[in-house]
Length: 483
Length: 102
Image 1 (spheres, each protein chain N blue to C red):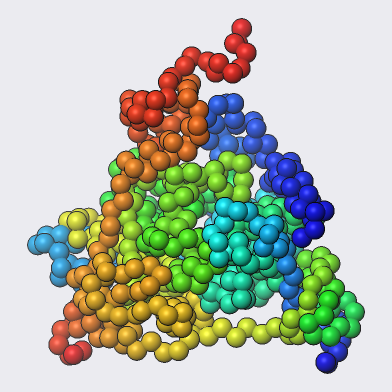
Image 2 (cartoon, chains in turn blue, orange):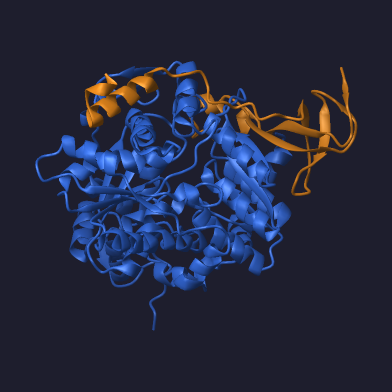
């Protein structure tokens, strides 16, 4: 890059907010308090679409009303290893049945509908996941042009089989796929494309996308009531950027006031660096893992829009991790015992649910809220073969001994499936530290905001702030006193 | 080298950022290599493989870069067979249904 290129890079990055405002059509400054707090609920309400309108949009575009299936054989197997009277009924929402093969179609349908209505000629999104195919599929229905920006290859041009398949799917729906090697500067390329095309930024993190997932939450409550006469006791959600959990939990709350435990589940990729050119192809999951889950839950506004509509810490009750080997094991189990062949990443929550079910009584209900499609590249067989090619050890043993990037360990028995519980206390403290971002004082309204953001209360937030030596003040000393 | 005809469907590759222009905060193995981009489109002029080409992408954008492939194919597969999956099948079937699956 020449000096000119370098200054072009810096100039473009400095226009970030302006580009975002135009490409999402949301003036995020309307919701800011000027301090830490911002008006999340107003931002969500301003999407202009009611829950019923979103359902109608989705019904007209091949999205939603997926079947909720009881996994009777997997439930029976979990009960063999549970205490007498324990082992909840496990249900799965077969989201692979959406057009484009995943729950991401719910997000994409609202974003694309809105883009079309607002007169944008096309949509762009940055994703290496199922969301790309979802946006491409919805854009195809509406005659919108579509560009998907993917982090796909390492610097030698070797791609994750799963991401290569997703690129194929995007192209099958007529999208242009811009593929990049590993690195966070993908955001620069993304901004440049937004400015060049004036397309709509169908970000995963806008209110449109998250409100599109609310139907998944409301449907699963309705489905469970219809099939069992009860509301679910626990819903397990695969967690990466937090949108799936946020939207699902919001939708559940719309349908029932009963207490439903919301559990986030991620694949444990501890020790692998997400921006590493080497680690990139040493992992067997490209989403649903802690490499996204932890940074996004502790700092949701690190996304590609100024304020993320995905705020999982507002809704999560427990956060657990499972190993890669366990997710592959349960993916095989789903095919062998239930006759349902699905992609592995979407089964992260199922792997956790198998163990969580043992904590609940037999009459209780646990809902796994997604599946995703499978195919060449996006099949556990392909991913394991790729791992073995990359020198990852694949063996049977104690699943707790798996080391991400070095080994994939299959349990020797379904009785060895387990989950690791993460400390929400530590995650909340980390979130508050990020939100405060070096300030030495906060306002009373910030404390209220942080309490809602962390699903705690003022007293808890004040204790955390005290530990960090941060004072509550009546007004911001750096701003003129309001008259 | 064979000339690829105008109008052909091709893939190009270009460098977006050179190693020295990438942020110092990156892991060293990432900082050590350029940020690369690949994109497909229709070739606007006849061009030889591995030389500079101009294409029109499916969204109608014009892009330049090294022509790396003509008619790039989808060659991803289910990979080499993983026999351990058969053992998982045996385990879960036997644990649920009994000895028939030993």
